[in-house]
Figure 1 (spheres, rainbow, N blue to C red):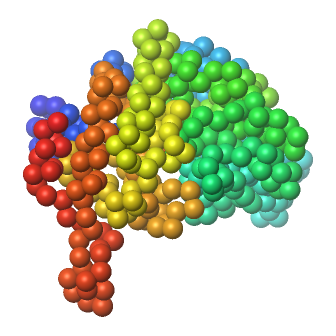
Figure 2 (tube, rainbow, N blue to C red; figure 1 turned 30 degrees about the vertical axis):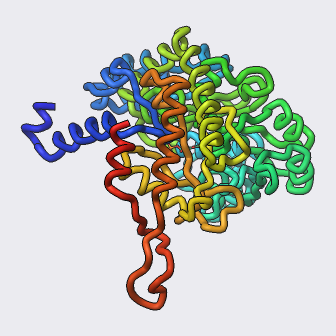
Figure 3 (cartoon, helix red, strand yellow; figure 1 turned 60 degrees about the vertical axis):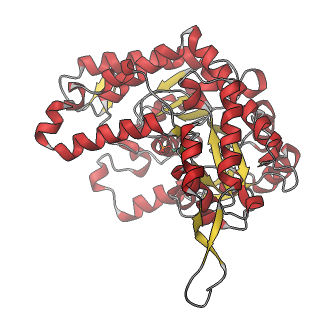
Length: 452
Ligand code: PLP
C-alpha cells in the first residue's frame, strides 16, 4: 500500500478507510463476505498483465501456457467442489455468467445457423439479411424466472435488464399470503408459458428451493432448468444444501458468483452438463473479452479452501446463525418475511416501525450496521424506497460469530429501529407530513448500538 500511496495517496487512503469501515461496522450485507488473505494474494499480482482470450488450450494469444494451467486447475477444482460435469471459470461477474449461460442454452437448444448453413464462410461478409436470420432464430424465446419483487435477480428477466430484451420474459412470484414459492402454481404457469428456460435461484428469498421439483416442472414443459446459485453456492459447496436442495444433480446449467457465501474473489462461474460445454467454453468471444487470470487464480484458491472440512462447518454455521437471528428478531417483536429463514439471509419488514427500507437502511448504518434495503414481495413502496431490509450472516459468521452474537444483533436492531422516526417535512406542500427519506435517531442511541 506504501507503493500505491507514493503514486496516489488518495487511493491508498481510501483502501485504508475501507478497511477501517469493514472492521468497525457490522457487515450484514447478504451478498458480501471476507476473503482469506490467500485468496487476496492470488489476485493481487502480475497475472493481471496477461491476455488469454479463448479458453485453456485454445487461445487467441501466444504465451498462455501458465494461464492455461491456472484456468484448468480452477475448472478441475470447481468440478470437484460441486460435482459438476463441466466448469467455466472466466466470467467476471454473476451477470456475465448468466449472459453466457443464456446464450449457451440458446445455441444448444435453438441453434444459431452455422456459417455453412448461411452459405458464407467469412462472418465479415455476412449480409444484413443473414444476420437477421440469426437474430430471428435466437430471438423471442421465453424465459421464466423469479420475479424481482419475490427475490429474483435483475438478470432473471427484469424489465430494464438485457435479459428481458434478449428473451420474451415471464416471471413467477411467491405466494402473496405465505411469501413462499408455490410449486403447483409455478407448474401451472410453466404449462401455459412453455419457456425455453425455467430459471431458479434468487437474491432475496429467505428459504431453500426444491430443485427436484423444479426439474420435474422443467421436464414436464420441455424447458431447460437453469439455476443461478450466486447467493447460496457456499451452502451447496459446504454440503448444507443437499438432496433435493442441491441444484447440481437436477439443473442443466448452473451459474454462480464466487464472492458471496462461497467466500472467493469477486467473479462468476458457469457449471453445466456436457451437452452445453462447447457453447459455455465460448463465453469469450460470445459475451466477454479477455479473462482475468489473477481472478481465476484466486477462484482456484477459494475452491481449494471450500473443499476443506472447515468450510463445511462454516456453511452449517451460516445457516444456524441466520435461523437463530430470525428467531431472535421475532422474539424482539420484529416482522420477518416468511416467519424465518433456512438459508443465509432474512428479510425484515420495517413498516411496523413507521419507516420505509430506505430510512431504516440509513438509520442502522448511522448506528454502525451495514446492510441493504430490499423490496418485499408485492412491495407497495417500490424498489427505491422499499419496505424491507435484507440481512445476511455470511460475513459475521466468517468472523467467528455464533448464536449468542445473533441474539445481541437482534436486540441491537430492536434498539435502533424502535428509536428511529421519520422526520417531519418542514416546507412546501407536504409540510407537516412524515418524510420518506429523512429520519430522526438520537445520538445516544447510535452510540449505544455502536458500543455493543
Ligand atoms: N445472480 C444473483 C442471484 C445475484 O444475487 C447477483 C448479484 O447480486 C448476480 C447474479 C450478479 O452478480 P454480479 O453482481 O457479480 O454481476
